[in-house]
Length: 340
Image (cartoon, rainbow, N blue to C red):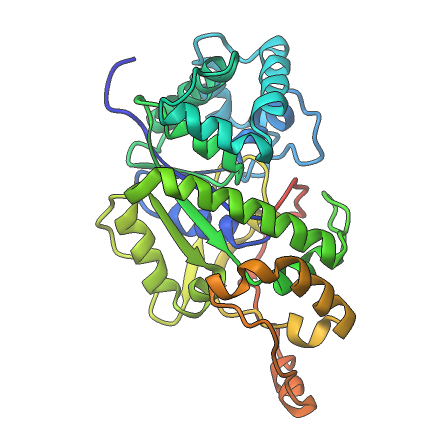
């Protein structure tokens, strides 16, 4: 390996927390490349085995000029045999339950398990090639696998910073209540169960990462996008101004994300603003189920255990125009993804 280590902002936490939006915002800065969820490059991009095999540019990942160049330059290539090997190792070594073991290895407290070095060698090689194709200042990887973030902390050839994004689990439960074309719906209790597990694992990563760890909330990003993105940029070692204007708007261009929320295909002016629809859209039973499973962490992240439902009049005002999700003036083709 020659040249400086690629700098990677690895996003962790549970799904539907705004990582796709944040990554695409940062992607508008020169020298920053948002790769979406690089974890799925082998399965979705090379093997085409997932339901979300499109690049953010709209082409199949394998047919995207950028990813074709990245994959062709890898030391062992990107054959189906290599891809199958990588997906097998991912399943065996990077599940959430593997986070403590990967952290112990990163701290040098136990021998590295067979396969970990091989897997991370390939990840680092991909990062180096992405850095050579537009991500020379920063690569944003929104894979959200705490065990992968943990393992990367032990690498000396990757300058990794871990960004942990949390979102109110009731809002996440609402997002999961409806099916998308890439993922089945999930009950509020199950969604919050995963929310708790992934966030606890992400906190473990933070304890080892120290100053290389930052936690932000989706709600703060939505209410103060310019300020929060500036904070993230400084954490990532960049001194650029936020590309979001004072009114919370940004013009999004093309990107080359692997997997992610269908919103990654949106183009044009996007307005970032809060989403509180769960307060009126979820039933009392759904709210109770989502709250109970996440209760141990709610106060820690500044979320209320109980709340007062808005009045019907307030609800009418709130729903008179779309709220919560980034509003795109223009949008791309329908997306097929893996996780938001």
